[in-house]
Image (cartoon, rainbow, N blue to C red):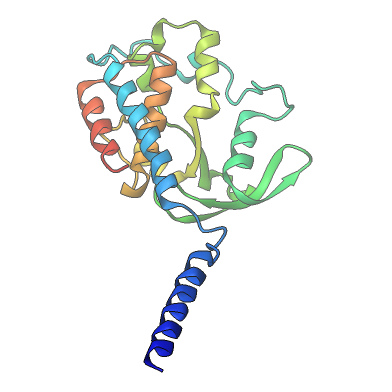
Length: 220
């Protein structure tokens, strides 16, 4: 009898272990490790790009004017819609349109503050399109020597544009990263975008801006 009981216990243990091995893994669970890996990869690339950028003093802003950067909100991708409406359509949720292009309503999760902003055409000024690397700063850091066509391309480059709430955008103005920074949870993304633009257009950085971007990358 003791032998039978012992044999039964062994069989039950084997069956239990077998069942646990064969239990299917839940599907659709997001991999935090993979997401972290992607963010780390972007940050690592940005750190390398940052190390390769030239650091210098800001140049003279003599001669700067917004119209030196060509037509405002030009239809650079030739889709029939101007750049501003393209960015609104990209960055806002639940959008309404008049015709094919003009965004007349929507909701913005402001990346700079985290505030939910309702966009409506009568109060369109509540949402503005920000140049992540400001035009005035770009002029001082190398864009003064560009052709008008290149400056126009820069001013309408979607990679350098972001729909944001008007209040932080007006506070930011032409400031670089050393003088103005978004909320901490967005600093990683902001730094990566800023560095990418600077790299693509071979724009220099001031020493304070370089240090600020390096610090923001530590939040990634």
